[in-house]
Structure formats: C-alpha cells, structure tokens
Amino acid sequence: MRSRVKLWQLIAAALLAGAAAQAETIPPQYLEIERKSCSDSCAKAGNPAPYCQRYCDCAIGKMKAQIPFETYSGVGQAAVKDEPQPPGAVDKLADIYTACAQETQ
Image (cartoon, rainbow, N blue to C red; front, side):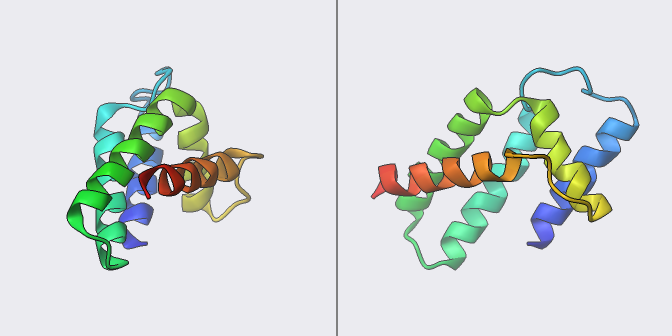
C-alpha cells in the first residue's frame, strides 16, 4: 500500500509540474512503478515468482492498452487528495487485475 501511495504522489507531482499532462498513454516510468507494486503484492500473497511475472505482465499490458494516462493520473490525484475516485476508473483497474488473475491460472 505504501508503494501505491508513493506512486500516486509521483503522479500528482508530475501533473502539478506539467510533466506528461498531455500524454495519451501511461508513461513507462509509472508502468514500472506499478509493475513493482504488483510483483511485491503478488509475492507477499505467497504466489510463486513465475506466476507473479505472468500476472503482472498481463496487468501492465492491459493497463497500457486500456487506460489513458489522464484516467490513471485522476486515480492518483484523488488518492493523494483523499477525494472520491473518478467514475469507473478504479472499477476498470479492478477489472484488469481480475481478468489477469483468471487468465494467469
């Protein structure tokens, strides 16, 4: 959870600084932070490394393909400000992780 908060803080800082605000896809540096968070969480849940690799590759691939940076950063901004999440954004992330869990089994 701590790494996700840090991720959201980094996203908010980038947006406040004007960096990548116009990007259509999630920038690679954020995807790598998300990948690390995914891998750490997966391993802590007791899953073997090969499973976590496949699961996180799936999740990151789907995020990259399906979630625009504006939506992704909106989730981060809301988390940092402790505000309601953008409509549907968290559900979309949850759907991606659920689909990848099913595909990876």
